[in-house]
Length: 184
Image (cartoon, rainbow, N blue to C red):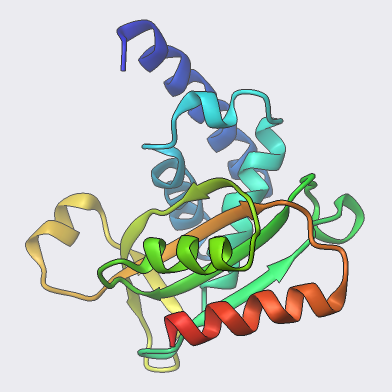
């Protein structure tokens, strides 16, 4: 990435993080904001520069909240069409959220299944993070990059995929059944 693009990317991520800070509450607010920063760290600026920072922040926070409780080895999977009134953010695409233990080829498996179903993919964001969870599966904290490198804890994939809008309940069910099959 050129220095000018790198600066522009950092400025955009800072705007997104600022929006996330305004929307985050509770005991894990600081961890949620740090998750948002990591979430966009490697996303090319070209993929997000035309989007509103508030929507980008809420997309990342949506995934964080979705993955906030997960029992060991449980696959969390959902697909939805965010609406401003209900979700506090908007997207012209259908959103797929996946939270799972990190494993080889997880993104490839998702993309291949979507391709098999003939569904175009517009964006994939896939931060791999290490979190500490309580015995009930609730996140107790997000480990820093340094802590994650020093421990041998479980890495978790938090995956956000934007696909062409799916408007029928049947299409969403078919989509989820196929993804559940390949990820299960």
